[in-house]
Image (cartoon, rainbow, N blue to C red; front, side):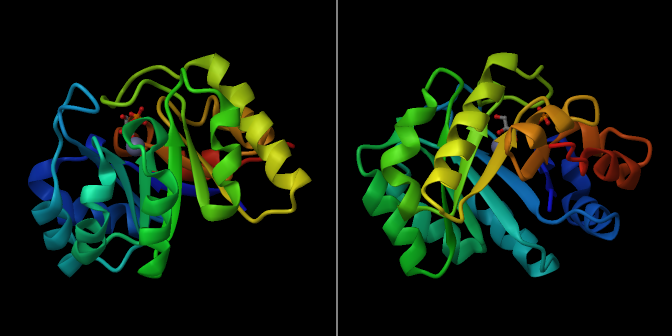
Length: 217
Ligand code: DX5
Ligand code: ZN
């Protein structure tokens, strides 16, 4: 089943709680929360207090994407704030296994992400230590960019490896995704689609999400 995780980076921040409630009502499977530190990526979004506040207003699955340097310093605090899925970048840390284990030890789902220039094979050693791989389809840091087509093949390579090893690891994709290209990603093996502008900017958010839940694989 294809799941949609709308990124709140594209929502109206002055109405964050209502925006999250709106996508829940319109059928979102989870909510994608992008945390940027201005070091790992050249942009700053928001952090722990915002997630804690939102947790009090919403019982949705919080899919927290950490674009921060040395995430091992903070994963437990993001779990305390309300994260259900914690994703961090392989490029941001020397302690990949330890950080995945820290997240799993708290009963949360652990996910590893790769930037467009990082080869698919970089995640192979960790596939049986994580619950999800996030393949970035744009350079992390900003919403509203266009998908980089070369990243799609990495989804296929990772999906084949997961199948070959009979693992139950989800593949999430993030950046520049909408109804026009979603099928290319699901066909390659992605099953969780992050979408910011194409959901929050759509006149009918339910229709936009439904249009992406298509798999002609
Ligand atoms: C980019 C973020 C994405 C972004 C997606 O660094 O990780 O989650 O918000 O936004 P769109 O769908 O607008 O590309
Ligand atoms: Zn993201």
